[in-house]
Length: 248
Ligand SMILES: *[C@@H]1O[C@H](CO)[C@@H](O)[C@H](O)[C@H]1NC(C)=O
Ligand SMILES: *[C@@H]1O[C@H](CO)[C@@H](O)[C@H](O)[C@H]1NC(C)=O
Ligand SMILES: *[C@@H]1O[C@H](CO)[C@@H](O)[C@H](O)[C@H]1NC(C)=O
Ligand SMILES: *[C@@H]1O[C@H](CO)[C@@H](O)[C@H](O)[C@H]1NC(C)=O
Ligand SMILES: *[C@@H]1O[C@H](CO)[C@@H](O)[C@H](O)[C@H]1NC(C)=O
Ligand SMILES: *[C@@H]1O[C@H](CO)[C@@H](O)[C@H](O)[C@H]1NC(C)=O
Image 1 (cartoon, rainbow, N blue to C red):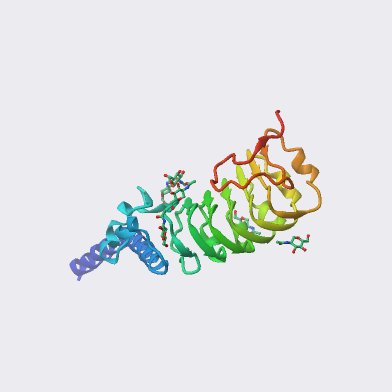
Image 2 (image 1 turned 45 degrees about the vertical axis):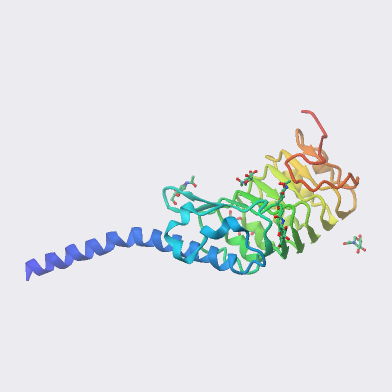
């Protein structure tokens, strides 16, 4: 009796311990499956993404454009910039990517709207969607990305207001670039509260009203004028079309 109880206890212990690596493995697998599923929705899937394959699910961390957190063995970065991708983000399942800190799809032909589900990337610090064909309004769920330091939305066809609620939660933001879109409404004065901001680019949109004085007061921030219309520059880089507005 006592011996079999001990055996059960030992077995139970082994079971419990084995649950942990299993959990990590299964979330990596879910992420790999989510990537393959999305890749299959693209109308043109670039050759470098052939490593994204159902027969290769267990090698996720070696996949093209994917980088992993070496502790958790889950995806921490996805960099698909300049891969000539045509498609939408509508069927990108963001939910499994709980460790994702960088998502870069800039300079492609991604169209459609920015899905609300992107707000589930709670660890995201770097979001680069610039240089695509994205349209529609910014989903309010983006306000949940409170760790964002870099937000690049320039050179798209995004429209609607930039809600103060969004800006208010982006307290870590160092770079905000929305130039060359169709954003309208007032420029939110809340931008003036982003104390870490270093780059701000608003030009070539459909904003109305004047530049809020709160933004004028931001010191040492490289700003571009929202109402001037500089030459269109397709290459999104940190300082495109900006000029040093003030020297502290
Ligand atoms: C990697 O993942 C671990 C466990 O989830 C986490 O504690 C750590 O901060 C992550 N490292 C990086 C560099 O994100
Ligand atoms: C993605 O790759 C491009 C080209 O190699 C690089 O310029 C960019 O900084 C990378 N993005 C991230 C988030 O690492
Ligand atoms: C954009 O991507 C194309 C490939 O689709 C590449 O030839 C071009 O150099 C990229 N431009 C920038 C600014 O990265
Ligand atoms: C980008 O993909 C399209 C097909 O979707 C193709 O016609 C074009 O040549 C590609 N451009 C580059 C630079 O690879
Ligand atoms: C702001 O971010 C926090 C997480 O830091 C989140 O709990 C909260 O819901 C966010 N606020 C909005 C309006 O999304
Ligand atoms: C720009 O804003 C004005 C109102 O300020 C509006 O009538 C017009 O339709 C907008 N244009 C675009 C392209 O959004």
